[in-house]
Image 1 (cartoon, rainbow, N blue to C red):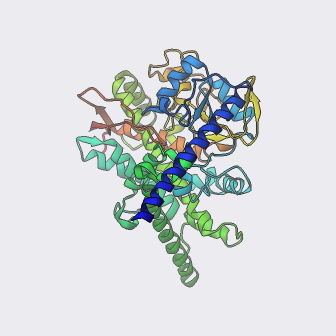
Image 2 (image 1 turned 45 degrees about the vertical axis):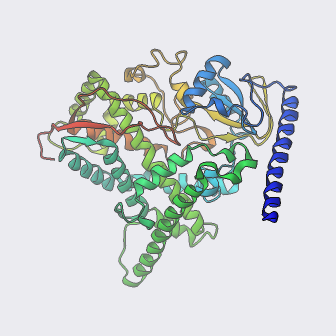
Image 3 (image 1 turned 180 degrees about the horizontal axis):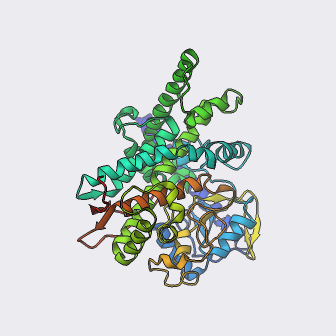
Length: 501
């Protein structure tokens, strides 16, 4: 007993000494940084810095702070210096002028426990590994030609979703959209659908992806105060390991199935349509750097990014249209002018829907799927806007604040798609007032696929159904890696085409 007591005393003493050392280091560091010209910002507390000011919806809290301190703001989140930018001009400075300096990602629990220790394209640091993955995605996996080859299966899955909605008078739109995206991405990636119960460990795709996004946006104290990382307050590390194990088992099963199927091709000589895992395995035969871990990392990014972000955007778009019936009517009239009422819309029809594209852009402006772009980290000291930014500073771009900035957008709080008519404002990262997919080196490599799917699915929903909701919509948000509606959208859908669903 005495030895246990002595161990406990020594452990407590070690923690206290560690906290004292950290406290003295913070005081010394703050004294040094005061000598440099830093951006303005609220005064940090010892140890925790400005963490206490983030709140439950950090993009809201940071927007309010920016109104006081300006579009470039300096915070200390725990042990780490952080710059928050909230204007197009400042976003351009960091993501274009100083893009290379801020091309790194900070270390995080999400990267360690759910991103193959930072080995996937989303979490990995800027370097040769990241460049190779990015090149593979842009030149091999997400080319216009390859995505066009999957048009038939996308149209098939969207038609199946439309048929399932037609069978119900009141629809849980989030659930329908999630199943749709699950089916599309699995068929593109792995060649077939997977039922909700086919995930290893009895975990469904939907549950896995939502849990991953929720955990990715959760507050892990060790990400900000490293010496407290081993405590794992809230059990986030344990939950991340569990959800990652579920995905990893699934990925191994998919890859093994593909290897067996490829062997059978060599035996029977039958040619099969190649999915993206087939493409990666083909490349792995000639490039030893494309390992199983490499393939699993790309699969992870494809599933999580493709499933959650686009369905979140479509759900917000329908929510806004229900609140603005005149906009909904105008969009439906445009679609009927292109496709009529005697057939389902095709993907090729979407190019003619100018007003619908404006609706999608307006949704991205007011409800970006990721209100805070994934954090960047500076690889060296630099000067931005007359301020000295130290090496190792984390960068947060608040695209939610940019989209609601009254100095940038007239009537910024109003859903008004007309504001984009006749204006060449794109979503590909070149117009810094609208950055739903990021910009620069770390922008999403599958922008075209994501944007076109949002347009096509939304157009089909508006073409096939008259939408209504009797009660007032709750537009509250839930925060994570994405920001979906806090409550799923339930709406009434009435079939309006002259053909049978």
